[in-house]
Image (cartoon, rainbow, N blue to C red):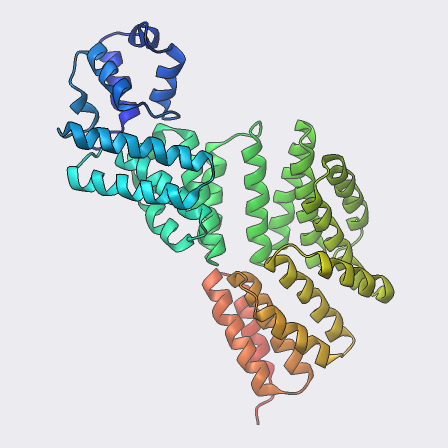
Length: 397
């Protein structure tokens, strides 16, 4: 059997010309039956037995195999795992999902394997075990049961998109985010979030025009919906892409709007992101006093390795423009020691190549740019070709 429990329940009910209220009877609500059929709620074993009795079948039909003790054990594991997820006890959740998965495999309870593997994969994402998450979730994309529930399909595709982005597989991440857009509509805030995420992928790939289009779409839609948080994030991304493409004309106004939105939400993380982009603008405008002052303040308040690497990247660019090569080299080495994603590491390698090119150290420049090419190719970025052209221009002893 390759049919999931929700689909089996719905088919059995419709074959008997029963409404959800008819099936519910006096013991459970019609709304609960609806949640079971949509896959948004998992029944207990006792409820499964009740439903089987109402449908005049044995409970085995919901498992595809007969072993009452194992059936009860597996349903208990599923409920405990779901509770652990709600409480964000991800290690406990994974242990129980693994146990449930092993029971499914051993006793061929194929009606539950899709549900269990979906939750296993999403739990692995939350534990930042991205490669394992991809290996668990990817087979579900070609499973017909993916289309039974849009919410579950969204969670699976989003887990794959986030995991592949963290692994530096940007073209794959782009594909999964695009698939998500086909599931959702503009009235769903997840549609806006997906545009922001997709824009960030294009930004990392160096496709700034594509990134700006998605950020603008997200910002305008969020504004119409009155979603201040998402509008602020879209504006922050928009300004990042604008400055990366060398445009600063409207950046200050957009950041003012993002700051007001972040302030209205009292969101310190958003406010930090606005301040970071103001720092980038000061670097581009070569406002020395303001840049160095704000850099020191932001560095003392930095909240993650990724933000720290981004700050160090700005300082490297500033120091290169000043030909302060020793400072640039110190910041580069500090940034490369951080556990950052492949796209950020690729940017740092490119800066390393530029640093040693300016210093006339051709061997070191070549080493950094070759590492940049390797990282960019892993990401699927066309910037690899740009770096190769820079390599060809290096003097040869």
